Image 1 (cartoon, each protein chain N blue to C red):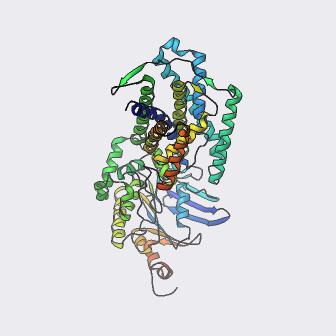
Image 2 (cartoon, each protein chain N blue to C red; image 1 turned 60 degrees about the horizontal axis):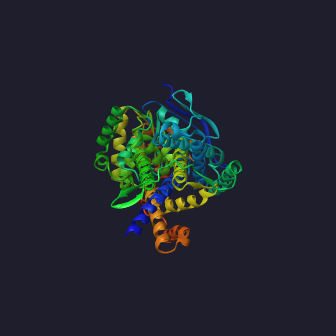
Image 3 (spheres, rainbow over the protein chains, first blue to last red; image 1 turned 60 degrees about the vertical axis):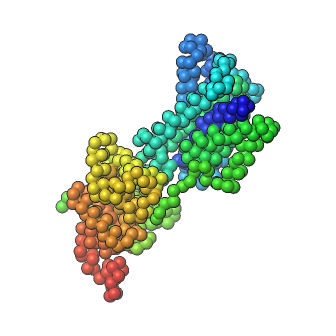
Length: 300
Length: 243
């Protein structure tokens, strides 16, 4: 029971990180029908920018830990959002009218470029986050667990809830949903679809960058290639939940994290990464539209 | 005579290398209902899509309210008062009826006025109010058409462009919708440009009409005149006598 509890909460922590990244894939796909393969690298940029900002400004010495982390998160998310917007302008917008495959190739190219640029700046070795977080444990449902594990889940779930409300309840959110359904019809409503695309390339990369920061803080060690495996798993999570579906990405991420943690604990740790892709293959065979990706059949 | 509210002069549109419109001259005055008739592929929808900005003309002019409109993006034209209920309705199927209507008012910001417009649309099409929390994709074809029209009206347009509102609907329903369109035109003075294959219904509603054939206007005039024109009768009204 003890181990099960630890593995489930562990899975929820990593799963909530998958979910944050998956939201970026799914929102971009929703509006542009494009898999942004450079999204995993934006996640990595979040981790690296977080480390640099943390070590160069020593915010936690001046502001106190809690406030420092908030300021840090805002800075990282903002910077990665800027990179995301530039990425869209440079790599995707010029290809908007081109065949789908051109944009996919451009995405792969952007991914390679971003990854190598990062390596040139920071070097190829693993980097270590400064130790700023408390190592304390808390009692939760009668079990002990690291306070940071709980924090990662709470922070992620809060961000996701905020995003969900934004997309469901605000005018801009409704415009995003409309553009995802039918861009032409959205334009006829007076919606500037280019603006919607920019907003999506602010939100997605900001969340991905924030996830990178969380991983750096939580696991302590980062590498310039980490975006690949996290990206692939988050992509799997997005497919699992139903690509283009925002609650789906959240559910898919959490579920994938738990499956992976339980698989690693009870079956074989060596196969940890394989479980995620086994899930991907199964979902593509059994339910390609994903768990929540069921489309309402439209009458004509 | 007043200057037209909406006008095209020598309007040309190309799909790739194929020219679909070979110079269309239309003039629509404020408050008029104008119908564009023609067979499949005549270029009716293309004309409408060029006016709303979904298609970029390859030549000629579009003038709205006395000013050239060709360079204005589609979403800005809505703000200027041109709203379209597009071909195939293109409602947002996975959003609720109410969300669809709210999106129609995207360019407006006064909440009270938007609510008043919505209330008016619910009065015009009461079924939309009963189904307001339902996903739009679950509506029947006729209800979806009402929603498409209502959604366009939510922008409080000066010009309402309607593309085949009768498509796929039962004759009784077409009659009801067209009656409501007249009511809307009389109540608000909104200018209506109606593209239709159902020439009989369209000419009954419209003040004036144009007949298009393969990218050209071949006939124009008051609706009553067109309705009694032997060529129109033969080609579009199922008349038995040849031209």
